[in-house]
Image (spheres, protein in one colour):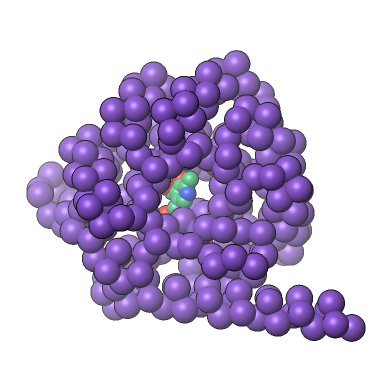
Length: 260
Ligand code: PXP
């Protein structure tokens, strides 16, 4: 089982800054702090309405992640404008996400299978430019296969529905976790790298991190919230510790089941 990487999404530092139209808190400073605390990469979503991260944030984040030798994961809608920005900054990775202006956050996965004609040429151009392309999808092997067929090297599984179900104690959590597990197994057989993210907190990170096929988690909103109480560095370190513990447990269980 490979080490699970942690990408820290710093969008909501910019949300707080923009609430006052001020220059602080600075998401670039948060990215520096996240890297110092052990983040394996920085994730940022430049939304079409610029509600949090701005164009100049992306410019600065591209510079500091390069300087610190950490990947920048640029979350983007499949639009000409975002493609041009990705091609101008050449981040390590681009994660294609659906975007609706009226939504509070990215509410569902990208319909890669249904949107083939619009998405495939963008994937091709980004891959040709040397960017690692990931598609943010719901836990559905059909969407994973469509991503693979389009040339994406990575899928990111949307964990939001599962995390909401756990928080709301809705009774749907087991089924949703099972869908994440089964899609991860199927995607591994397809030769895809598998990431996961959205809505993850200290509770939900444990079963998610235990999914052996996952290579990376991207976590933002909860960590930025926790940073108010504990500081960003300690919040990231605690998340890292929980990820490592979940992985170690899952490895021990796997070893036990194969030795039986
Ligand atoms: N991954 C993707 C593709 C996302 O769009 C987001 C939210 O911007 C995240 C991960 C992080 O989600 P959260 O902020 O809920 O941890």
